[in-house]
Length: 247
Image (cartoon, rainbow, N blue to C red; front, side):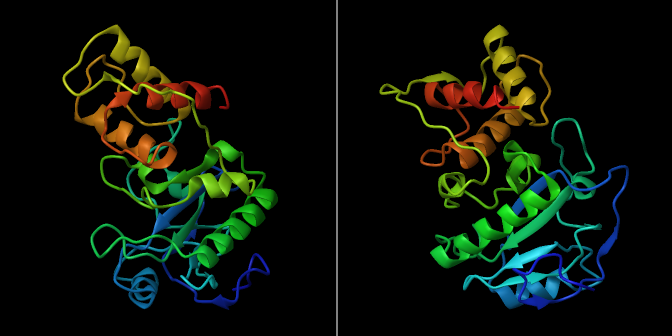
């Protein structure tokens, strides 16, 4: 195995890989946190044949970048999920695991040197594979009913300032809730349509149920992390409308 980028300091090959299916190469960067008590434990799991999980890269808290699977190969990191109607996200993506204990084991801010390494790696992969900014995604974006990572403490705004991904702010002062669980009708349907237009997997049925709440929370966790409540408030809706225009 050979490193795909000079940013890699160590190769730790994982057997958990196979060939990409139906694509010439990746068009998504998918960011995760490891969600385990230590980087060592995460690395052991990502290279254990019995776990059937892996990623292309692991970024340690000190900024060290490890490569586990060649980019040309399909790593097993995304699991069940979808984006823009595609369900085999593993075939379309480069998976980057960022060492952090996650919500189950003491979620904490990501060290600055780790974020700087993530930015460098995303830039490098994005430039080589011509990955569009709006396809730099969170694991929670493609699996909102199952996943929260890399979570509301991940600084997506800092990545955007460094040229990675997309971000949007608003000048809204009174941020009232427009739609929430239990609501029905044309306004809910229009809101769901915008979420689907951006890429989220969601039924457009005009019913604000659990599915729409999970997707709304995932969107907030990525693009409006200061308040993640699964309710479509004015700020959330305005950010979504702006981002849809970028797709």
